[in-house]
Length: 237
Image (cartoon, rainbow, N blue to C red; front, side, top):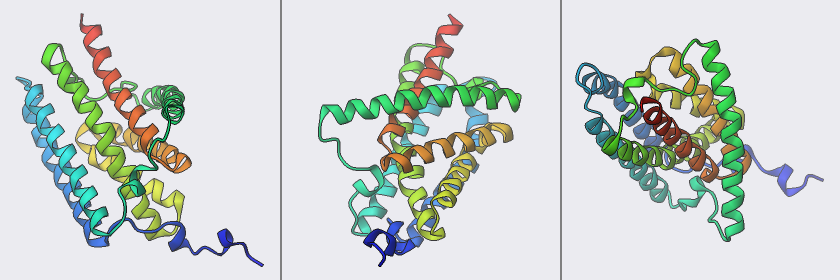
């Protein structure tokens, strides 16, 4: 006889967390943002960079997307925990996820450096013009990094990855599709960076699936982005 776990259908193993129409809306928002963001970045980060404006608008969009995702999950009648993972119930669990995030970050840092070298782009880097210089720029960059860690992990790994798994009835396919969407959303950084960011997203997708939570990914993502900005600022001085 089959066990209960073996008898589960693919749809019960990978349930949808929102309606297909809502997911299409989220994808449309991401597509519109990617297109608009390219011209917005060129306008604000070229001859006379206005990084403060760029950071503020980007933070606003990150949280707007987060609200859109949460609204779709709740409209489905599901708990937001289905995309975030279970609550932390003890300090030990918090420390465990911080430790997982730290180990994951080290591995990702090395892999991104190697992949960046192979692709002939700056390892771990974004476009140099995006990085902060000092003062308010660095403060806003860290705020943006934390926002990206929370909002992007919720959107891409917590929400879209689960939706793609439900639609394809396959965890690997869901991870790859979510990673490709993540890369496409950052296409304004150039083709080779898009490839690197897609691979970066796949690594976060594997982490989220293995841990059944986006919390370690949030920590690693926020730290990685913050680290890039702080390192860039220190190296300029």
